[in-house]
Image 1 (spheres, rainbow, N blue to C red):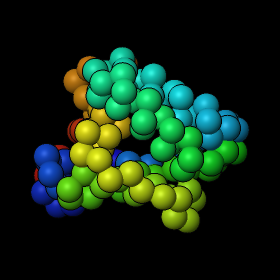
Image 2 (image 1 turned 90 degrees about the horizontal axis):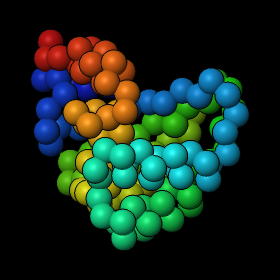
Image 3 (image 1 turned 90 degrees about the vertical axis):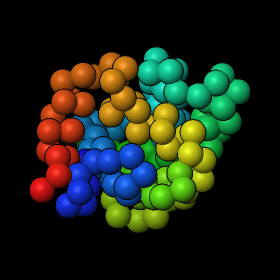
Image 4 (image 1 turned 180 degrees about the vertical axis):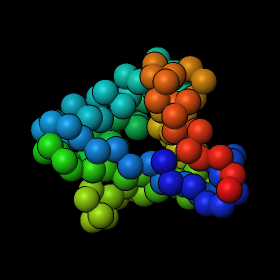
Length: 124
């Protein structure tokens, strides 16, 4: 989790980099993301279906050591990069909140990871 000197704060830009420990196809990454959004209460079923379609169009297959980074920008735009190369964007504040919530929501399925991320994202 990359944040500015003010730390992780609502409305402030941040980046979340995901490094993959094994090869996974992009469609599976998209589906797993949509499933986690549902578990954390992100979006409606119709929104998640639309977001799943967008994620499938953006997310590439990854190999061990690859990364996908989401750049969360003001206005609810999320720009995705794969190993530093631009992939595409989703401009929807609901998506931005739901996608970040996979890791940062109090309802995450990975509370220890959330705690570690937020600890490192405190104001400096």
